Image 1 (cartoon, rainbow, N blue to C red):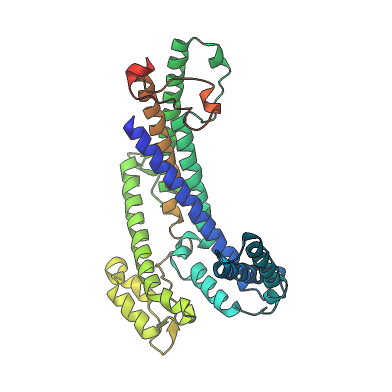
Image 2: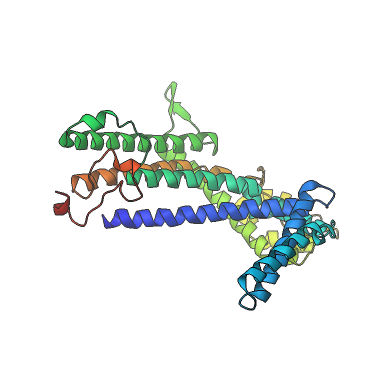
Length: 354
């Protein structure tokens, strides 16, 4: 019962964190896309006017709060917000264009986000994660989608057994689905061999062999991810300061980084294809992996969110069955339609449930 409560609180906080991350990612995307367009475009003009309006209203609020009556405060803030939107916001149509293009270009093409497909790819992964966390929370509270018409006419003893049987079946489906998705990802995304010679015929490759291929692929992907994060740490200050991200490294600095970064230990002679020309020049702070497209490099790894989420949902169903058997939860068809917490109908001790 304590585990169920702690697990639920963890998932609730996780869901809030995911939502906030999605809002931040979408907000950054909209802001930079608007700022990199000049004021002759509608979205460029609206973003600049919005920024100016918010800035004027915020400054007015900070200067006038607790110093003037609420009516005067509200009036001045509103007027300055309108002035910022209508007048001042139109006076800097080219402001921040080059800076925003450089910053967005770095985020999309030469940062860790590139390995996820950019900001849009990040939002896609977060949305999937949020859906799975929400499904686990629904399963834990008995608010998952179900047909409960027949249950309303069953005796309580029979209803409890039927409900537990249904949850056990749902858990089994989740576990089988989780296994199947891992197997599918191993073959389709990590190129694990689906068959191997077996006498004169072909047999399915053992699941453990496919997992070995996955482990090797994940290790390679996260090696590249760690190297990209290291580049990001060295680059972010320059980009924020306004320097072109494409000129973050000289060719000599880049080649030195390749030599010292363990690329040759991992890829051998193929690492030579990652070096820059020996002539003077600059290099973008984006990693390369021999034989792989680095854009979306980590997507196949994050595809495991789905089978992992199914596993967690299945465990939630099992935990709910245990709590019902132990008397901590009452099976009530109407509870799923009540307020938060009613679905679990948790009590302090099994004796009270009895």
